[in-house]
Length: 279
Ligand code: ATR
Image (cartoon, rainbow, N blue to C red; front, side, top):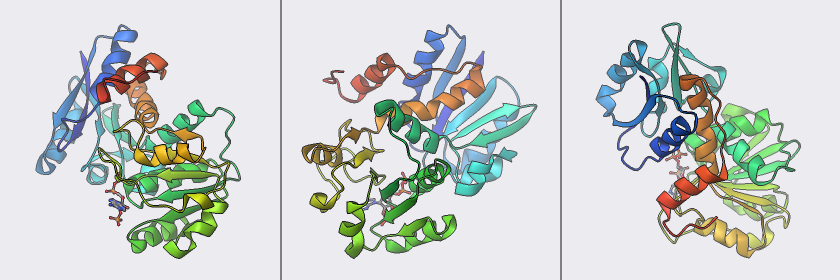
């Protein structure tokens, strides 16, 4: 039986098994998707074990997304550009890898607002970690006009801006209000708001009234950041859909069927996060 997995350290919180097991059932595929807690010192051995046998690939999450890159044979262009991966699969005895976070983000936005186009738009991203790199890369592929990165540690935003070139700038906090006025899509990638009441303080009154607001955090389903955006009458994009959409490519690589993100799947995972969730 083909087996895939998600590896991380720790990994107990992962909802990926719920998602892939749903698709395996839906498509009547005899396969298995499991969580594996892999300590950093065992990462190389685990990835090597995917070269033979019934394990056909894996998702990779924190803290292994960057380190894993050096253990695969064929990282795709995206992985080479952003320096991290989240999906590994075997083909002709070689290990291939990609990062699906960026594509998952864009698919989530388009599922919520099908008429939205990224082309020519101005994005502001809060945070400058690994997720920001994946998003910046994907938004540039979608022909956004400009991306502002605002981060607590300015040097990290600067580093990403330099890596991606003149369409990306690191935003000084003093200029935030001015750039929010021009922003078409505002995205939170920081963990602020994860399982807490806190939200990044922002001069919301300056945000372009037609801007859409997205979070990549999905616990809680509607973060304090999104609640505030909603109170200011912005269309909001919750983060859970990104988790579901980023999973599509891995499932297709391992099990040969391209699955669909349905409302039923969304509700299944949403109820696991919040038992009171109502569609
Ligand atoms: P990921 O891979 O999910 O992007 P990460 O690499 O840990 O996660 O990045 C998290 C980002 O959230 C960082 O940019 C971090 O800011 P710093 O670069 O200053 O560390 C930001 N972040 C985390 N906690 C924060 C907080 N309390 N206030 C503001 N920013 C925060």
